[in-house]
Length: 556
Image (cartoon, rainbow, N blue to C red; front, side, top):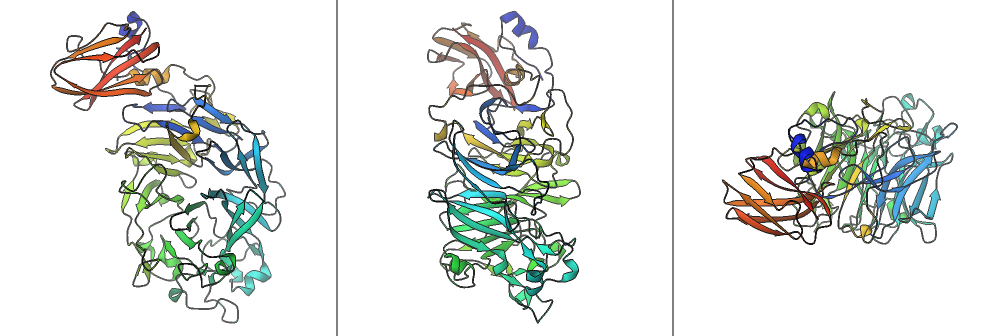
């Protein structure tokens, strides 16, 4: 690959024929004409800060926190510029309830990092963990563990041979109103059990005849109290439903939020008339006594969500379900799109022969080199409005953007080694730079209105400050007689001339790889008004036969 450096003409011509050095952390790959333009929100493990990065991997904003805090695990930026985040203390010694993904505190902070609200749940009875969602009304729906001691487990029909630690921590969900700190709705998995182990105990029944209930004896064979380990929560305001990812069941669950708390504790009520029983579950029908291992579709999945962020109904994947499918094979992960068979007239999810539909995933995506997408935990996938996918392999802190043609158009490696920032040139290994998720927000996201999003440095130490501009400039330059631009530098008007193609789609990129203009031209010559461009270096480029060509120019 050849490169063009935006400097003086002599250096520029020299560097056109040199090879670009490869970063080992931070930004790795960038094709600005193919990526989705936006800013990336990242909340790496083993450190306290939430970062907003541009596509060059530079920090454009940061919400700092004290060094003795850690993610717990998610953060969301809202249109009004408020940041909702979950965190915990870095010290967990002595915590009565603790497992991976444990949280403790929910916070709302403004753009300037002022604390507006917080809520803590971390004691011997309950603990926040993993994820939460914000409703249009401003309430927060959160996920938590609750303690059930040995007596409660035995009374519910739990097989004592799988009660290794004498307790269980089933998941429960609650909705809190930050305006008055009141919990206004709750749902408990423990209210919706079935078991066929002991007919003298509660919840006894035929599991295969109760697909809307949860088998209290299914799950972890080791008997660890973190029985379900819900690791994702999403809310669908249109349907008023809540989605949960339950990795130790290898399933996605959907519950009805049109219930009140009393109905959510029972088996009737709400638009579904199921109360708090599961409306839909999918991924592993063995959990409710149907099918076998060949029917399993999900494997310790993460980031289950309705596909709707920054998309609309015209997108063919809108309101389907996206998921990162972690443990498909011993060294293989993938992302899936699932199309649940929702019947809006009967307000239910359809089944066939006692099994929730669909029978298979709608689509599967992985890295072109499948060995580069494997993570036993964490991880995320986001469908972008331009048809690309942003995927994060969490245990390797590796995020990449895949185009609709399955080309890698952007790559970023979270530059952390445990609790310390990595140095450019470091080689990272699994679990060095754990990253729960990455999410890209469009450049026109209203939270960014009138905000300073200029570059403010890097997460990594000893960064290569010219790496992004050189990636942007890399483009197999054409023969000067076949592709000309003049005058250069230009004041108000730039002329481009080309040979061999009647119609050409051009784009202008700034030094940070941001597309500032695009246009089509024909006839071999185009006069371009560049008077509105700020003074600086730019690249005029186009694609021919899947090869990108570029010319550097300077705007006076």
